[in-house]
Image (cartoon, rainbow, N blue to C red; front, side, top):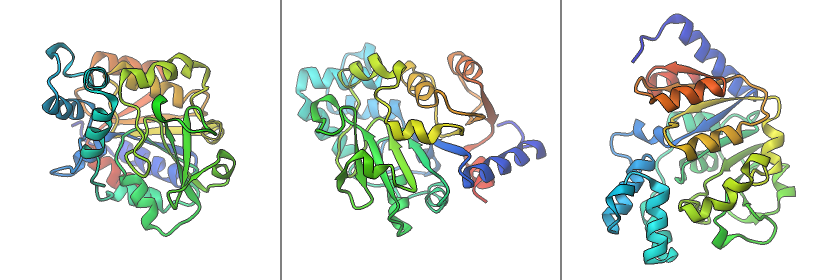
Length: 283
């Protein structure tokens, strides 16, 4: 990793202060799970694809692409098989890490974006004893409910609520790809994303309250990679029309597409270990 300079450390301290004051929105990815020696759930898209392939024989040409693997299983073994496997893989709720505990205790933080399916961030919020928070999650086409064509809102007690109630939460946890807990509804197959990707450029699938809370604020990406077009599209559209600045803690082995994405989107890369960055941000 690039040597941590005093300048980088000072910037990370500033990022932490801006998160705490509600000026920067944390955008969390599955890389946070890699901070554990043995994560209890899959720690990324490729790891999850490999687990799915271990349960169902999938053509080799698509084995590294989660969305294609999930679609193959949905098409050839039924959606119920895919949902059952996802529930199995994410049944365990990882113990929240220090960053998640810190974020959960920030009463001025209006929005946390978490793009993975696990329940660690939700568990961290629940452990604070706070009641002024809730979760909005994306819904698969097969399981959408009345009151939200693209998402559903779930309160701190796990009950589904209307978006009007969600607007009063002090902190909103936004899970755009769905979540294993508490409803078990996830977007993972190509079919899940067809309509979402058709309309996401005009922002329709992104809840109005998420759009309101990102306004005038920046983002900091932690534990995220952008090697896949799906990942880049969601990051771009969720951050669209936000105020900036944007930062990302990244490893040195970024792909050319990842570097280009960061440049185009005006995201400043901070190349150091995620654990080191988190220790400074959350101090």
